[in-house]
View 1 (cartoon, rainbow, N blue to C red):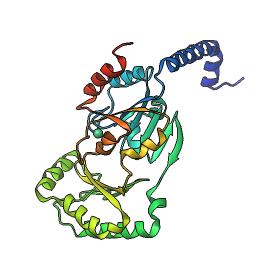
View 2: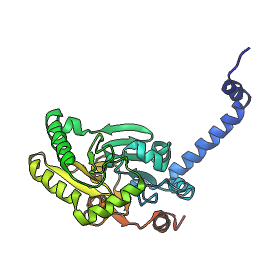
View 3: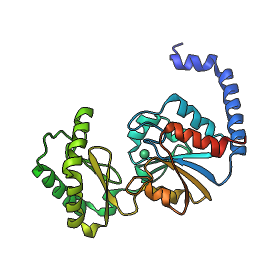
Length: 279
Ligand SMILES: [Mg+2]
């Protein structure tokens, strides 16, 4: 009889698997029982759970797994799910009770998609096209030392616009950042777009080294809070909580208790003090 390697493996170890599954389930249930009801720890990704643009270290992955045993955990990142998965791991939607990508415009709970909102639906194709066409013309006329590719990245809930182009190298990225600090290309472009498209009620947010984001008003990280009505105590941890930072609105929100962190190590220390001090 022909058998695939997996089939033969599962036959020989099926009883072991069953015991392991049972133990895992019991462990999960006991963890659920001690978790504080109505309390969630919600984390920004970049600079909070990982070093900027880097992946999570095994240490923080293990820490978050332990934290999840005492409190419901969630992540909210500005990037799309693909990028968040690159940073926090492919199993991110299962590793956290809530995983909000694009500030919550794409929302997962217990590994399942529970909601999406898109710029396309919200603005409509006509207005979107008008905005993109104007932006492309502006970028084409912009005289900067080097240009690469991917000048407009279309995400489900925002446009990310980069004068140099997103697929530049790290070195080119650093150079652009220095150059932009002197010439304010991004700030100037934002003021032009803001005036031209005032009727669309858009928010412009300059973040990172080479780009800025454009999204409808209110589509910042507070967007994800609509999925957390069951929680009376929402602890939010973020590194950019200052005015103009991408964590500011959710940090300031009446619905959250905001915590400013300086690094993943600081996040772990603050969580230990808050949730793990008296086991
Ligand atoms: Mg951050």
